Image 1 (cartoon, rainbow, N blue to C red):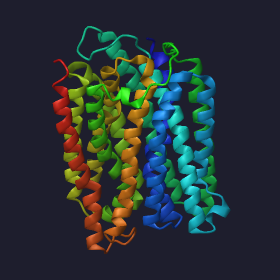
Image 2 (image 1 turned 120 degrees about the vertical axis):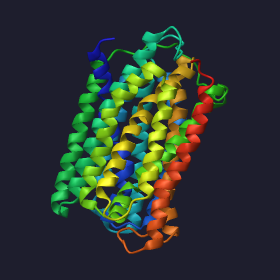
Image 3 (image 1 turned 135 degrees about the horizontal axis):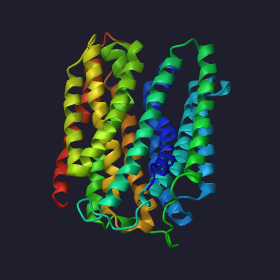
Image 4 (image 1 turned 90 degrees about the vertical axis):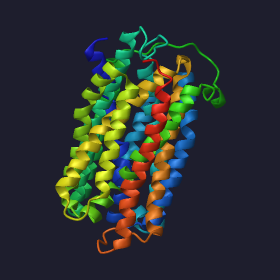
Length: 427
C-alpha cells in the first residue's frame, strides 16, 4: 500500500482526537471552574450522557455494516453534526447561561449529540481501517504483509490523533486563561478551525485513501453472536480495565494540576508533554510490535503506566518537574494503549463482514468506562473535595487516591488478564 494512501486514511484521526479525549479532559473543568456549575450535578450529567453514548454504539456499528463503512452520505452527515456540537459545547448561548439548570440541560444535550456524531464517524473510520486487509490474519502467522499493513494504518491514524490531542490540549487551555470577551472570540475561531480540519480530513478519506473491501450484504448480526468468540470476549475484559485506568485520570487531571500540584499556569506544558510523548512513542511501539508482537508490547506499555501512576501518587504542591516526568512517562505508555488494542481486535476476529458491529461493541466498552469515570467527580464531592480549595487535606488525599491509586489498580488487573490472554497467541 502506498504511504500517501495511508496518510490520507490517517488524517481523519486528527479532528476525531480533537473531539474525543481532550473534550473528556477539559469540558468537566470548563463547565465547573469557568462556567460555575456544581461538581456533583456536572458529574451526574456526564455519567448519563456517556451512558447514552455507550448504549447506542453497538447499534451504530450494526448500521455501518449494513450501509458500508465508506458510505459518503453517512460520513458527511456525521462530520457536519460533529462540527456543530463541538461548537455548541465550547460556546453555550446566552440563554443557556442564565441558570445552572439551563446550562446543565445544554451540556447534557450537546454531549449526547456530540457523542452520537463522534461514534457515527469514528466507528465507520475504524471499520474502514480494519477492511484494508482481506485474509484471516494471525499475528505470528505467514501473512506478515497484512499484519504490517494493519499496524501501518493504525500508526498513521494514531499519529495524526496525537497531533490532534496536542493541539486541542494546548489551545483551549491557553484560551481559557484570557479574559472572557477575548476567550469567547478565540473559542469561536477555534471551532471554525476545527470544522475546516474535519472538512479537509473527510475529503482526503473519501478521495485519496485506499477504499475498503466491499463486503456482502447481510442481515444485522445479533450481539450474542459476537460474544461467542471467546478470544474477543477476553480482549474486551482487558480493554475495559485498561480503558478505565486511562479514563479516570483523564477526567481529573486538570483538578490534580490545579489543586494538588498547584501549577495551573503550566497546564498547557503538562498536557502537551503527555501527548507529545505519546506521539513520539507511537513509531517505537509499532516497531516493537512488529518484532515481539502487539500483545507483548502492550504489556510493556502497561508496566510503564503503572510506574507513572505510582509516581503521581507521591507528588504534592511544588512538584512541577516531577509531574512533568510523570506526564512524559504516562504519555509514552498511552501510545501503546492507542495503537495496539485495535490491531489485536482485528487479529482475533475472522468475521470481516461484521467489523462495524465488533467495533461498535468495542466502542461501547470504551464509552462505558468514560461514563464510570464521570462518576469520579461525584465521588470526590462525596469525599468533601472542592475545586480550587487547596487547604483541604482530606479532599486532596481523596483526589490523589482517585486520580492515581485507583487507575494503578485497574491497570494491574488489565495487565494480569493480558498476560493470561497472551498464552492463547502463538509465539
